[in-house]
Image 1 (cartoon, rainbow, N blue to C red):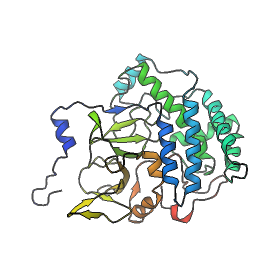
Image 2: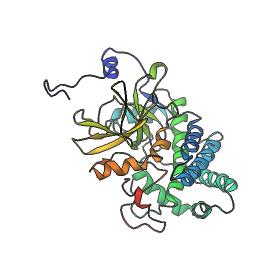
Image 3: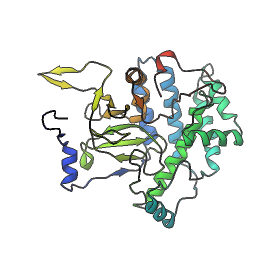
Image 4: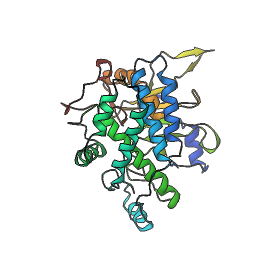
Length: 338
């Protein structure tokens, strides 16, 4: 904010928008989304305090990738449903309105079998994966309803993220297949802070490089991995443009008097008190919103201690608001994450 004029300078992205420059407003998930996430998790795991968990999630993402390549056919929305969703401004594949095909439970179990086959016999993670694998249909459905509604209260925090990976797999397939079958089916929702495809919260945002996406910022859906455009220097919760600041894990280095930002920052809003992380591809070509968010929990702790509340979620690591039905509580250094 310019204190002398009370007006904010427009970003190059906003200038391009005003000039009518065409670029994709929505990026459906590609076939390599889980494979790319797994590679990044393995990169980030080296020397990390959460190494074992990051490697477990890398293995889970590799299993998601394997299942996505052969996912069975499931019912998709038709043109009439797409028109109705567009007319009402509601997401076509709403997490709380679209009924997932029962096959998602079979695919989850196949995913977990893939993980168990590759986990060392003495891995402490085996018990949690086996517990998730043993859940019956009724329990899985109950957990799915809570996860899709964003209600963490009472969830087993050890098994819930594993169940969530099955829902991610199903909705990622749904979003990708629907985008291919019905081009243009996903319109702009009434609530721009949520995914245009499924209405879920984002995990983080990413500023992209290359081609017609150069310099544009996209929010990354926690459920279906769709990315949708939002201009930079804008709160992802209240959509305000004043009081936006960027927090980093390390003090910004300077070269020739020019500050160098970290590849991952927390974009905070003084107006509404919320934040969401932003990953910058121009600082690290390999950033991946969900993996980098998971590996920077300390940043969540720092901004939450400063009084900011997270806008968004990461289904690979959940935190409850009360007593869970089993499962260990998160480590002390991670309690600031919400």
